Image (tube, rainbow, N blue to C red; front, top):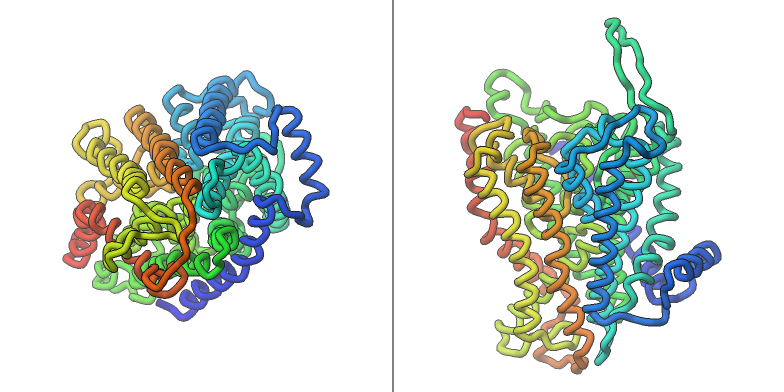
Length: 569
């Protein structure tokens, strides 16, 4: 690795560290109903929304009511987005006369954006009208992110409250996530992006003549507004097919840094929110430390692998210092491209500024493993936190077995019922990833879409179902995913990966909120120190290694050894 690449990783991490406490404290105040500086603007809008929607903000939900409200809201959103795509040729703001989106692609895209996945089996600038981009996709970028934050806060309340029955009001949490957190940050970020050259208009496609005399079509549209929330909400759906590698989405090194910062900011801040709401900020920092260790390990491994490059090229006379520039933008280089890849897969954000399919096997395996671990390395907004809490429950359960005591988490006993629910949520993700990949690998419809054979082809199929199930949305590329098999199959993986695992998660919140809090004794395993952080990281890696090591061995790891033996795919 170069010194510059190391400094960029360290500098970016320090930037995330600096924002963690102030943003986390602000979110704690928002969801606790305390006064904030944004109240004069947001409170009147909040009251208006409740009046229109008939919401009583004083009435809280138990875990079943909270979950049902969330599911109903998202199913209605899915149906509405599907209808917008199918009818976009009849709707306004369609200067390029885009036709109706195909039924299977409409299903895939609707599930994708509602599930905060934003997997795209299409070229945005050639498929979606301005109306669909703004009213359909950008709206879901906000509310799907707000849903994730709301679920995380509800679970934290379940941990923090004692002998209670309710975990909050879903509609209140959804509105406050949107008005106090997502909207103001997204608006400021969109203005910053426009100042750097990101496009924001309603113009039709422009035709330009190149130096060679050919005609080139340059798409226009409301890009900056979607770009800001796609990163902040860890959505990832690009206005353009090239996503954040496109100069209209990500034109400068500053926008590249800003977009990476937006991807991790809320996920990191929720660590402090957790510690603050449960009355133990050291615990929040211990969780942050676990996430940070996994993130930094992935960043250094991926960047090092890409800087090392391809040994076959070295034998052909290419300098090792040149590294692997295939699939990367010259204006960003290897360091910024590798860091962006780790950031976007650590946070379940599908935005990419380089093509992961062109990474070295080890570099590509880092992006794949980041998602396989359950999007807990900062993770999607909210989703990373509630995914991490599942692993915390498993970690304290294992710790309790090691010392021969009933496991406790912040004074609440973790019983067999809670552990079973946590494992059920984890197994749902594993099932969707592995069964989906297996179905693709043994079917003609699955393998016919591949552009590469051998272990690299397996990596492409596995990455598709991993990205869909983990609600990441980034693509390994090299896979023609806009087919009926992948549109339907990946759509199911996205739906189950997002919503099916939420049911046992919320049941855990309902179980924890009813429990009394015991006084911590000498035998209680502390969850606020280095030992806990190491144990938590170990549990995450062991679960990931035991579950996914076989498919990783048959994919990127065997490809790595074959590459050193002189064989490419």
